[in-house]
Image (cartoon, rainbow, N blue to C red; front, side, top):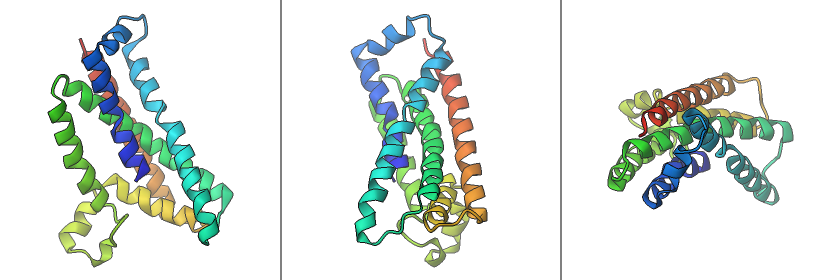
Amino acid sequence: MISLFGTSMSGSNLLYEMMTGSYERVLATPLDRSAILVGRSLKEFAPLVVQGLLIALVCVPFGFTLYPLHLLVGLLLLGLFGIGVGALSIALALAAKNREWLFWGVQQSLLFPLLILSGMMLPLEAGPAWMRTAALFNPLTYIVDAERALLAGTFASTDVLWGFVAAAVTCVVGLWVGIRRTRKTV
């Protein structure tokens, strides 16, 4: 949930900067516009890793078995996914410039279906067939399955592989969309 909620708010920070005029000052610098987007997206990595680590450590006294190497790989997976979601959020903010309602409408319309269709909160096996089919197109489904396998102490699972594929695709697509949108910003 932290990888989805925290990073999808990146665009709201950018909207605030656009309203105050500070983003325009950043655009006036000699930085390449793609570097601005990549830097903003990469900044999502550190908070995700720290938050995920804190949550895991808090769970230990409640009976959570900690596998340090598996946790590290799981945190890297979250970070990779978060970079892509952050870049998509920034691209959405740039597209919704001066129309905050559009950003929030699209963001909220996507956020909750992605969350529900990931199997994170409710088991998908008990859901209707259309829901299980829709979940196959949700990258978060693969991230959730990979994290479950990793935190249970196993690397030898196809879920881990598919989780990294989904995270990498999300990261690449997010950065590509974000860079294209950033370069079009006037």
